[in-house]
View 1 (cartoon, protein in one colour):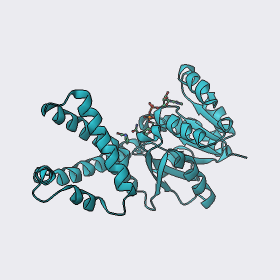
View 2 (cartoon, rainbow, N blue to C red):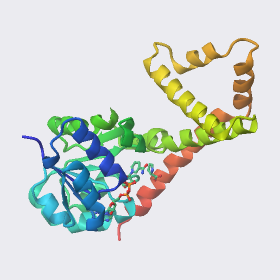
View 3 (cartoon, helix red, strand yellow):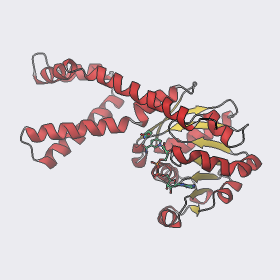
View 4 (cartoon, helix red, strand yellow):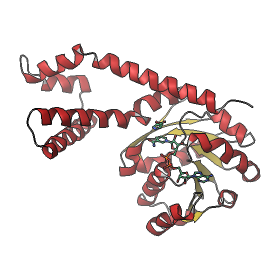
Length: 275
Ligand SMILES: NC(=O)C1=CN([C@@H]2O[C@H](COP(=O)(O)OP(=O)(O)OC[C@H]3O[C@@H](n4cnc5c(N)ncnc54)[C@H](O)[C@@H]3O)[C@@H](O)[C@H]2O)C=CC1
Ligand SMILES: O=C(O)[C@@H]1CCC=N1
C-alpha cells in the first residue's frame, strides 16, 4: 500500500510536488494537503482528487510522511502546534523550507525524528525541477528511497551528505531559475535593441536557453567544449563571449551565489534563534 503523504501548506511548491507524484502514478487518495483557508484547497481537491483539510493535526494523525511546505517564517508556529501529533505518530519529516536546518525543525517538533531537508526549485511545476536532499542520522535507507520517490517525478534528485551543502544547492538550483529568467529578460531586451520584434526576441531567447540546456544534458562533451564549438575562431560568438568574460560574468556568478548562501545562513540564524 502507498505511504500516506501529508503536505502542510498547499502552495506552489507543494502542488508542484504532489502534482508530479500523481502524474507519475502515485494514488491521489494517499495524499493530503492542508492550508489555512478552504478556498485555497477546493481547486486542488477538484483538480487532483487529493484529500484536503484545514486541520493540520488531523491531516498528520495518519501520515507516514509529512512534507512541511509553508513559508519559513511560519514554520516555527506550525511545527510547535504539530508537536503532540507528530510525537505520537513519528512520521518521516520532509521540509522544503529555505534556511531552516534539520536540527531546528526536529527541536520544534519535539525531537528524535527522522528529518529530510529538501531544497527544490520552481521548474518542478513543469516536471523539470532540481532538488538537493539531506537526511539526518535517523532517516533509514527505506525512508531515503521513499523521499527520492516523492521528488523524482518532478525532476532531478541529488543527495548531499553534509547539511551545509544545502546552502550551495540553494545558491545553484533553488534560487537558480531566477538567474536564468534574468538572462532571458536581458537577452530579449538586447534582441529588441537590435531591432527584433519583442515576441520574436523572447521566443528566440527562451528556445536558445532550452536548447542549450537540453544539448548540454545529452552531450558527451562538457559545457566548456560545447561553448568552444559555437565560437568559430575570429567569428561572432568569440567576440560576444569575450565581452561577457571581460565584463566579469564568472566573478559575478561567484559573488551572487556566495551572497545567496550567506543569506541562507543568515535566515537559519534568524529563524532558528532560541528564545
Ligand atoms: N518558491 C520557490 O522558488 C521555492 C520555495 N521553497 C520553499 O517552499 C516553501 C513554500 O513556498 P511556496 O510554495 O512558494 O509558498 P506558498 O505561499 O505558495 O505556499 C505556502 C502555503 O502554506 C499555506 N499555509 C500558511 N499557513 C499555514 C498553516 N498554518 N497551516 C497550513 N498551511 C498554511 C498557505 O495557504 C499557502 O498555500 C517555503 O518554505 C520556501 O522556502 C523552496 C525552494 C524554492
Ligand atoms: O528566495 C527564496 O528564499 C526561496 C528559496 C529558494 C528559492 N526561493
